[in-house]
Length: 314
Image 1: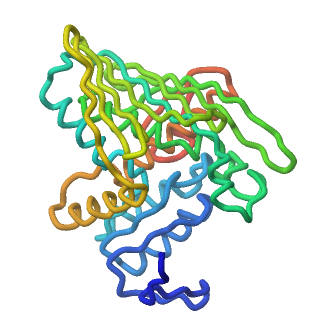
Image 2 (image 1 turned 30 degrees about the horizontal axis):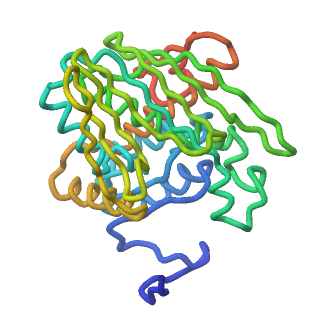
């Protein structure tokens, strides 16, 4: 808890430029892409951008993608759950095939955001931050897009490909100046026809963050915050006792594991589950969700049209 004298705080106008291995962008989402484009000019080894990558307008998302294709800098998005200890254990179990054919996948991130405001007492509520504005990347659809990202990560891991259609129901709340979705319900279908569900909300307490993978032979659960010691993976096979596999961690471990992953990617050139491409794919789903709620119809995603709203069609 002591101050580290190695940390230097600077106003933006006096910020040092160049010479960094890693640049992290942790501002409100509407500033992520402009700052990322600027950071790319410094040519760091890696650039980490917090989630969600941008607002659902997708403004300049394709520009960022094209810039990175010409850059040596590797870009990562802060969906740290998919590179954590519990997620790696899930992947290990999935790889051994004991679940049989995977039939469906549900991911829920249900968490009242009162804890955020309690931890930041200078904020009186959602209207004081981007969280209270879905158009700025807030609301349940943006704040808890970890769930959409985890669903996409797992479906790709089991060979079911990218999300191709989104059918969504969102509940919008107007509260003073704030306008946000407090509940975001998604039915998703991938390019192979695999289907599943994502639930994100900012109203549930106590918190529930879980992924449920259902196979022919049983189920596998990823549970965030299983107990005071951390996460857990729960394996339930037909005719066998349920096995709870603890994945102990502290909150800082989420970020430490992410940094270890980035370091490994830089050293080995391995494919990353938190790459810019994965983060952009998640933003297409978030944007499609709002479009689906507006039109009351299923929205299709055409990746050939890039990371723009033109990729979303009725």
